[in-house]
Length: 395
Image (cartoon, rainbow, N blue to C red):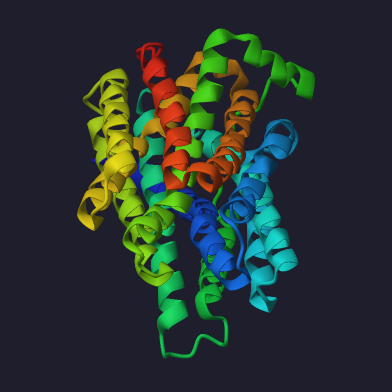
């Protein structure tokens, strides 16, 4: 009886810790509204593809600047406090667009959103490792990505509702999305601040040079490039999917925007199922299956001209890309267990791929229409196919 009571107490304590952390993963998903928002801003301001793709590129540019310093900040103030700082910056980024959607305001909002998300992703993932054993880390991070994906696929739905509804949205239109997510972000701050979490302390402080030296380890470098490709494909699909439909089927943005939701619905489903599949299937086998699904989808997007076939391709990318991040991230953390904060900073710096890919895709689309953008994403998929061969077995 006493052991049962202790087990129940431990389970309750764990739930009280993990639920606020998962709510933070939901707030992490706010960064994916950038694809939807950039399409609406492009429409409102009459921008070209390369100009509009500057917005998601700007968001992910800050991952290059802030990820490694955040790893060092965690060594000084702890992971939980660092996550709280990231939530505060994210909250500010969501308030800014409530005052307008001109070019400067949106640049400021997306910059703050990128900074907040860079700090959050660097600190939140290793915070989970304080609560979960290493053999369950990949599946738990995948479940976190499932929660994050819920925020991602709701974004285009809320924006379209705000743009077309006759209900009062305080004159915000599609920007009501920012107001709703600001309220959720505020709840996340309160929940995490009230949650006690015991953290492991680093043995030594580290500097930028020590962090970057880790890229000299071949496997860490492979993981870093893998993260770049993953987020490049993710942001690229998020931004380009509606444009493919508008180009080939001449549908308006409000209808074509549902393509982003299709991608995120299947990415969400993939994260949810992946959390269970990874408990019994080898990460290497599951990763290989996921990448092959994306490769097939890219081939389809080169030639598809019907709405159904495009949706099928987007579903394959969504499901295939859903578990790539968590597998690569857990592989990197387990490969360097004594340097989790530093490795986390490097891996999140890899989200800079969200800057590189959209910029390249924008110029390719201007030159060769959306087939050019698909070609850029295909390069990322081919690299992930190579990375599959390097995945290690975690015991």
